[in-house]
Length: 627
Picture (tube, rainbow, N blue to C red):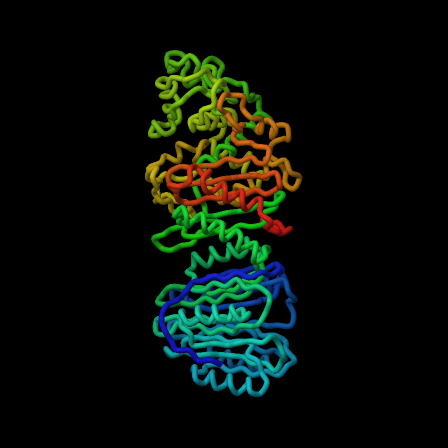
């Protein structure tokens, strides 16, 4: 065994390999001792799952646990936790009498008190276990038992009385060729990982711990063709982000190790398998990273659906540059005008469930919003305003050329409407000419409120999003201090400060925050496929996809741009760029980022070409559904 010199710094790196998706698993972290016992009783007791891995660590001075359960047999093993040194020693002897050997050992210094936890497995082969070994003693024991034909099957590093200490298990059995390393600092572990990867060895055990305010690593690498997705030096936020990434790659979490360095908890973790092979992952990664590099994008989230099934989702880059927190597939982003197909769908559903018609007028006598300017409160100076219908709003053909949402966003909903009717002349009569105006969809939000008797947000949540299985979407907050849990930070660009926007005023035209996964779930409600129920009928979907007859409309229909090969809606505003695209080959892609690049004109110059290239690539998408 190689002995490495100690050093400093923790690390964070990622390597992907191909593998096939394994069985189901459940993972929990940041559990107290009692919480861990409760989880154990539920998963290993009631649900008959096997405890596959456990780690004890110091979090805020408290004994804390992370654990993984899988669907393998719940017999042939035993587990103990919250053990002192003496208790651990006694338990090893007891389990040996029962024919069990230590399989997963974990130990942590909790304010000077050493705590052990262990999983024991039923094994017929001869084995030897040692603990409380110095680095030199561990090296000597390793040489001794390997020389006698035993293989190292477990190693655990921990701090004892301020010193680097090891526990290990050797078993007299055959197995893959392996290499063991210990006493590594962060840089040495990174270098060792790279070397062993290049030689075809993948980590199966990584023990991370702290001594003298510095991180230490011990690891076992085995020769294998299977894949490992490895991350270390992850803070709590980034461990959750990488857990989410692993889940939506179709990977199985196999190993987790929590450790505390200078009061901060970090995690090292190993995943095995992925729904996509390595070449396909690299194809997506390379395209995404090139777009991010070319456009100076801090953070990006992407999700891909094949024939109505979620097959891939991943976060890239940073959700917050100030603390290095990573984007997760579960990060929330402002989606800007990708909000418009959601509003259009809500209108379309109201045409099926109420007396609303697309030909209904908004203003004037009998208009849906006619009471705003009725009688002595008349505020309509523009004659053509009384010709505006629900359909002309959906198709951006109201005749207006100015956008009150941007010009007078400080006013409330009623007053901004009155102001526009009083001050904005229409360039053409409604229905004649296409002009993209956010105010058109703002007005549709007020129509939805009038016809449903609910706020716009609550109606969309209950009548549209909930029926698609979406629960995380909401109207965003205007200020950075009002960010939703899990929402990214937005960064300024050439179009202005993201936090001067009145997002709550822009609810129906651009106010939603969402995950790309949520946008795909919404898309299943309007895609006309049979895998998940639609929220509107096929006939209404066809109406929604019918391209406007207004001059200049191009391929714009009713809240969607529609082409023979795709339908989509993009979104862009300060700090935000997003796209939701469905292609005729069954691929649907949603992407969000937390800036608006100078070189990408509302997705058409960079994001959409990247999406199209991914959708039309030869990627072998998995058959499973990660929704």
